[in-house]
Length: 147
Image (cartoon, rainbow, N blue to C red):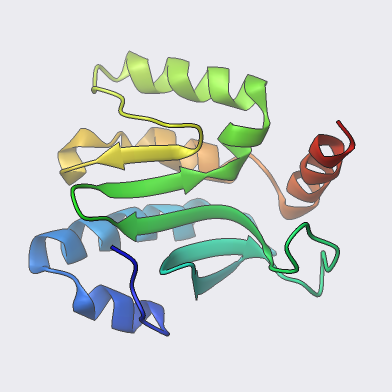
């Protein structure tokens, strides 16, 4: 479900109450752990946390680098974690911490899917978001592009 919302507030208001509550809680966790320098925007129909173009203008698609995102899809909600996608050590740490919670992990390459807030280990999400200061994430992006 891609949203046409222009602002985060508009996006949240468009969600059913149960999803609005869950997305709002996860958003708070992300904002509480998000290193300085990233910006919260609406992009690609979801709430996106990104490296501003002023800081990193040279990107593969001319858009800001997405560090994390949060979305309500048709059958689930999702948190997207680019650092976990781009760095195998970060992915290994994330998967180990997630499994240690005993919660069932439903994950693609960067997408962590959940149906209810109780399905998501918020502390593990917060740690993953806090992992990369913006300059470190930009360096990770450049290393990946050279491969």
